[in-house]
Length: 401
Image 1 (tube, rainbow, N blue to C red):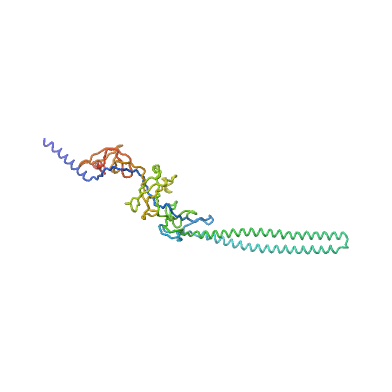
Image 2: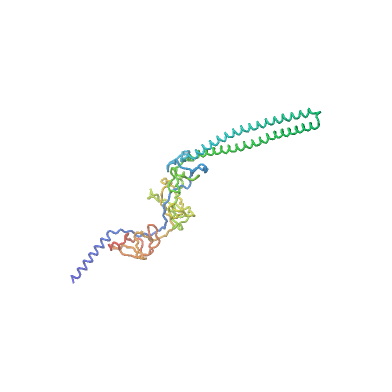
C-alpha cells in the first residue's frame, strides 16, 4: 500500500514545484474600474491659429518660372525688413535686356520716321510753291491777253484753271500727308509706351524677387506639397504660393490627419489629449475645431485617404514651436464605471476570451466577456471585478513549454 502511494506523492511534489516556479515569474496587473475612454490617436504638427503668411511674388508668365535661390533657415527669428526669400533673377534680367534693346530700336525708328516725314513735307511744300508760281504766271498771261482772240483767251483760261487745280491738289496733299504723319507718330508712340511699360514691369518684377519680412517673428517654412518636405533652394513654387509663416504664438492649434476608416467617429468639440514627442511626460488638452469635408491622399505616392482635422489647444506653452510633432488622442467616447484591463492580459480561444486571474498563490483560467477597447485597454463586461489581479502572459503557453 505504501509503495502505491509513493509515485502519487512524487507526482504531486513535482507538479507543485513546477507550478510554484511558473507562478513566481509571472507579471500581473490589477483590474481597474472607472472612466474608460475610446480614442483615435494620430500624429500632428503644431501651428499658429493666426499667422502672417509670406508668399512667392505674383509675376507675369513672360518672366518664366520662379526658382528659389535663397530661403531663410527654418525657425530663424527675423525682424521687419530682413530678407527671407530670394529668387533667381536670370529670366527677368533677360527680359529687361530685351526690353531695353527693343526700346532703343523703337526710339531710333521714331527719329528716322520724323526725319523722313520732314523730308516728305519739304518736298510737298516745294511742289506747292511751284504750283503757286505756275498759277501766278498763267494769271498774268490771261491779264495781258486783253486784245487777243477769244480762242487764245480761252486757252489761257484753261491753263489758269489747270494751274488752280494743281495748286489745290498740292495743298491737299500736304494736309493729307500731315494727317498720315500724325497717325504714324501715334502708332510709334503707342509701341514705345508699351515697351516702356514692359521695361517698368520687368524692373518692378526684379525688385519683387527679393522678399523681406513684413514683421517680427519666427520664420516657419511651409511644406512643398509635391515633395512633402520643407521648401528648399532650387525648387520652383507657383506665383503667389505661400512659403513661410510668421506665427502668433499666443494661440496654437494642432493639425493632424485622420484615416477615412475613423473619420465618422470624429465630431466638432470633442476633447483631445496632446503630447509633444520631445516632452511626452506632459499632457496638454484641446478640442476639435475643424474637420475637412473632402478626403485627400496622405502622400502623393500613397493610396491611403485621410481627412485633415484641426485641434485648438486650450493653452499655449513656450515649449511649443510651430512644426513640432505631437501625438493627438481624440476622445470619441467615454464609458463611466467600467471594469477594464490591459490588452496584453486578455487572450482568445476561438470566439471566447479568457484571462488568468490570480487566486491565492495560483492562477485560474477565467472566461470573460470582452467589450469595447482602445489602443491600451479593453473593458471586461463580466468575469472580473475591481482589485482582481490578472496575468500579463498566457500561462497556457508557458505550461505547454
